Length: 63
Image (tube, rainbow, N blue to C red; front, side, top):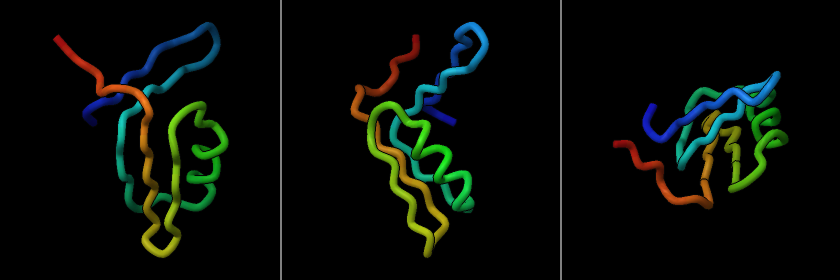
């Protein structure tokens, strides 16, 4: 997946993610992600089982 970065911080993983739309997401997983998000906007459309993640940061740059 493009624009996804994970880092290990002591005893947990931090996931940095840019704008994305995920299909086939359960309500339970969507609720967990919404509660865990620290920045940006997370919306779930149950009709389509789609999760939309909108970041407030600039896109990641890889070299």
